[in-house]
Length: 228
Image 1 (cartoon, rainbow, N blue to C red):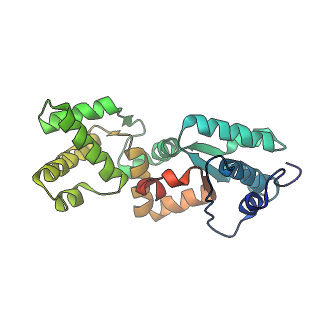
Image 2: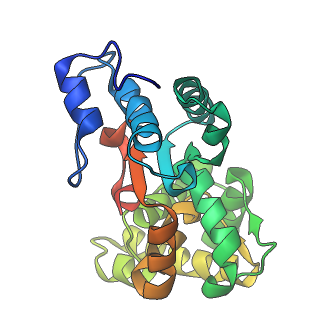
Image 3: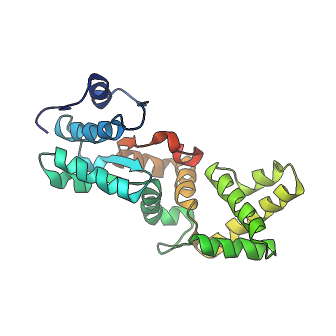
């Protein structure tokens, strides 16, 4: 990228050039927010001396991540540098962290990732019901608790009804069963790295040194767990 921010307007250039701390870009759909991210990454590599392996960009779909990496490659003088970037979904980054830090979470290196059908069956067995709507409601509650970083005991304590308390107890059993199976579910791919970083300063510092610049596309869609 010989000229910084070619073809960009003044606000886009300002956001792409900003380096002095967190920066939130608020703009409507189609206004070029993703372009700001790709140009900023190219600027960090070409003009600011950042190594591509220390930069991460997160988005919500694998397709968007692939397209972003391709766009960045086209902006770099050496397109191969784009391959060293971490450009992925939140969940893909979570898997990467869990695979490398499994021992710090009491997991084996080859832990299993359960799909939604397996999780449904597990909750159904614990709920002792054939009513699929009831199981779905409990499964949704568990997902909301995990994404809100609410542990089972807190969920039970804060229950307003017996149904909520029962869901909380199933949540507690569900978490224990996954641990016994050496398995995680989709929500754990983000929740567990967050809990690890909160509780283990050495691991957190290691990843902060590894990923020194973090950019998030569609930031407005993040939940509590992703925000953390």
